[in-house]
Image 1: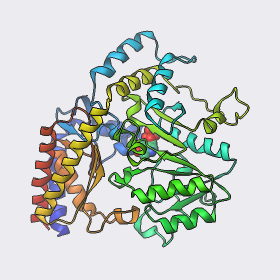
Image 2 (image 1 turned 60 degrees about the vertical axis):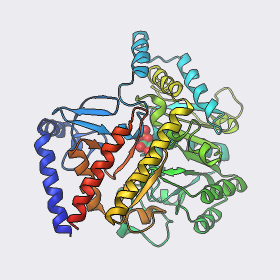
Image 3 (image 1 turned 180 degrees about the vertical axis):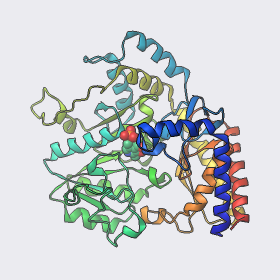
Image 4 (image 1 turned 135 degrees about the horizontal axis):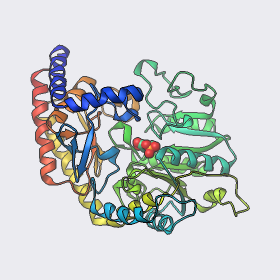
Amino acid sequence: MNQKLNQLLDKQKNQYISKTKKSYEMQKISEKYMPGGSTRTTQWMEPYPFYADNAHGSIMTDIDGNNYLDFMINATSLILGHSSEEVKNVLNTQIQKGTAYSAPTDGQAKLAKLITDRTRSMETLRFTNSGTEATMMAIMAARAYTQKHKIAKFEGGYHGTHDHVSISVSPKAEDLKESTHPGILQYPGQPKSLLNDVIVLPFNDIEKSKELINAHREDLACLIMEPVISGLGYLPLKQNFLQFTRDITNELDIVLIYDEIQSYRLAPGGAQEIFGITPDLTSLGKIIGGGLPVGAFGGKEEIMETLNPSSNNYKLSHAGTFNGNPLTMEAGAAVMSTLTKDKYTNMNSMGDSLRIKLNSIFDELEIDSQITGIGSLFGINFNSNKIKDYRSFINNNNLLTKVLFMGLLNNGVLMQTKNAGALNIKTTENDLNKLVGLVRDISTEIKSNL
Ligand SMILES: Cc1ncc(COP(=O)(O)O)c(C=O)c1O
């Protein structure tokens, strides 16, 4: 089976190479100046990435003139689609007035109000330039507030690239031990001492998580988690597990941090609104910057007061040359004001019907698979086990994943390389029919090569 599928994948790669000659040349030039030719690991794909020229709505066009129906939309961030009029208008105005000041602008307060008004957990917030900084600062605020140093996170949980969350993010199957803790370092030379401070828990396993949290309860400042796991095809955590994490952190005075950098697009108040759970702190990113670099963290006022230089509780400095950049603030405010409740409802119900259609393809073809996701986020997984945590997710069949990804790409549909994706408000029924039709055709070809 593998031989035939590998031949199919080679054929697909050759087809891609023949369509992306200018991108290949650009990649060779870029490789001279940047490792891997790029400045972002997630821009890499085999055999090389295509280079973007422009993008409008749901369509991205590369420098060879190929069009892609874009379900990646810059890692789910462009919820109004590419080059939206709403964002372009406010950027055009702001750019005439200046691009960065050392003084605050009214744009900061405007976006902060839009977010705090709709997000139950966020009484006050601070802006950052990325999601990585948002989770880093949320953890630092939890530490400053509790005056404790350990943090708990989940195996397979991604929260950006800083060291304390870079433990057991994507360990190889062969390195996994029976227990999740102590965790696994992400790169050689990463300080082993981090393993003492970062407690790694298994998703959806109440008993083991309870045991580990209790064992470290005296030193734990926070538990950081996503309610919907981006790296596992947008798997929503089970409601009783989410409730357990809220209850135990309340009971032990551990700060519960929700990383809603991706899941914030699911409802006006994020996934926490859908699940009816209020964390102590929340970190955000992606959609709230209107397509410009952004992050934010916020929550209970008494925790956030640790960042207030005029408060007696001031404990934590938070600088950043471009924090609250006026362009980002205006673009973010334009997006958040456009996102009325009906927009979420519409995108989410399109996501529901997409998942039903995708499921029925694989049922018909009798290919082991699981369609994961919630609302406007979805993932296609070739897996014979029920996905419930990192360990079950990494049983996904890599070869089938690559063949589907490459097949879609060659036919003008861009997904994340693990075949997860996101809708945007410009996504149409026709777009979804195109995706479903291609998934059916490519999976039929896969079936005939199994
Ligand atoms: C869940 C989650 N947390 C944190 C981050 C880091 O955000 P950024 O890439 O803006 O640093 C990401 C980015 O993909 C993410 O998906």
